[in-house]
Image 1 (cartoon, rainbow, N blue to C red):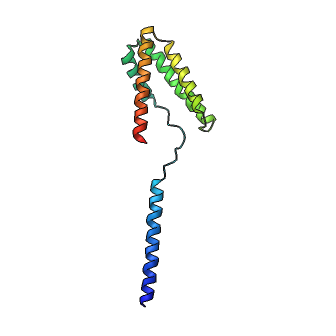
Image 2: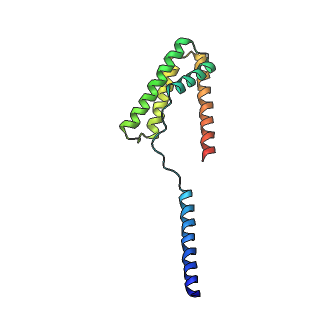
Image 3: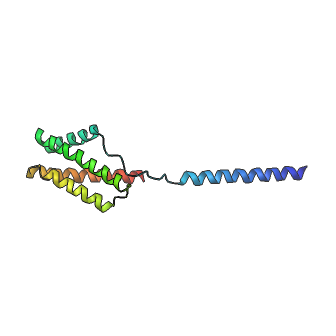
Length: 135
């Protein structure tokens, strides 16, 4: 009887160890990303354009045209991901962003272009610091 209790205790100990080890392994696995981040909603685009407008002192006409560019840009990005099953290369995305920024600059005065470059640089630095905090 004593031998049977030891065997049962040993089996329970092994099962408990396997349970805890598998729990730790699963807890450490990073979740898989499900494709690209969602494009911003209309209200988020409006918020971005308002922030840009404040920083660059945009006219109402510029604000409307830039809002249209933002919407078009994000629709273009969404289509790229949909058509390529989310496999758009980082280089392609970077080129799309550069083209988008050039389209915006074409609507700005020289003074606004300088402010825009500064604005973009600051936002890129903020995004980079947010990414490093998440990792």
